[in-house]
Length: 116
Length: 111
Picture 1 (cartoon, rainbow over the protein chains, first blue to last red):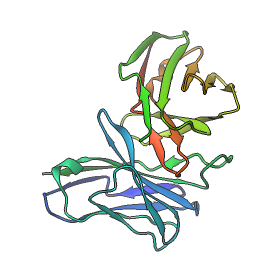
Picture 2: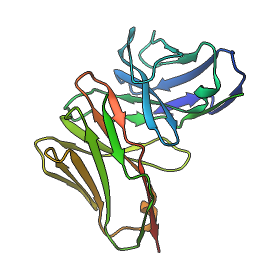
Picture 3: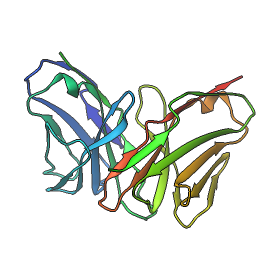
Picture 4: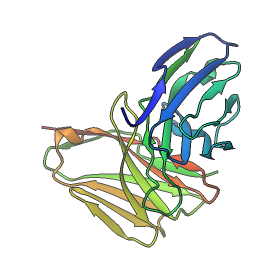
């Protein structure tokens, strides 16, 4: 089906383990984003990508690594998970950013990550 | 850094009334603001965008205003329905292409 998907939807891991969250979109959107959503903080941008092989830090990038070898995929890796990274992670994509008619972001269903 | 504030208290209104949600921002003055709807357990869904040179934008029962002097956007839902119950988020993009979202206001529309 067309759209934006995330996997896994739920993940429980232990402190210190490496975890990779997957994001896949079928629209060939140039821009992709990773956010985390925590109570009281709303959505916070972790990393974003303007195109394949172009990534940039967001508001809270520490402890996370991203890559984008293909336009449609944007995995997020927690290299050594910590309890403070327990959160709901959302991936999003958009055709463009800035003042255009195509800058709305389309969000995936989210991944609920628990770090014990 | 950029800060966006939305009323963290839930807004409870009666069906048929107009709901008004507030979004205030500090520091950077954005070229536009976006509003999203989020239902429990799901990702946000885009609703409306308003540019800095637009005072008001409408889409069906939705209306958004943008006051760059007050650094505030108001989001109105007229003739509200129980199906409008959700959390509403505002968002802006700064001039470094970074996006900031408010923590959202939960709207409860009672029949």
